[in-house]
Length: 203
Image (cartoon, rainbow, N blue to C red; front, top):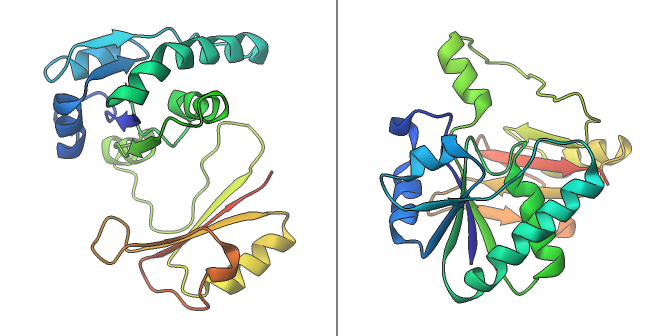
């Protein structure tokens, strides 16, 4: 199994308890650079994999495939962690690695453990309070939407469909004993609650 583990913004005290436990109990830990390696070292011995900051996707795909090749056999036979700064599902090296793993090594199970992201880290350090809708962008085309407090999820899906969104996930009470995650559009309910989320994605 391959687990992408968020290590937070760089402060060793901002690793989650779950991240620490997984690092301690993993068979192998990989990281993309020295900053992540430093955060991991109190709990495991990391190996650095090279992920150059490039925009040439032909070169990047070769690098991602090479690193996936390195990880695959170990992840089939044990628990392999890829630890990274921030959160593994937001603007993350792990997103690309996971995509390549799923394509070339679909037998390797993958999952993620959230970390404190740059978005929430910024708000804390800059004392920037956000209590209405906001936009996060790296300058690329907007292909994702997340609606919080989605108390009319099916209605939202219809609205998002008109904007060109095609894939939807409904989630409610995440990480609790009443957690609900629905990926089949037809099974998404009419009503949600304060803790409901609708995620929408364009191709």
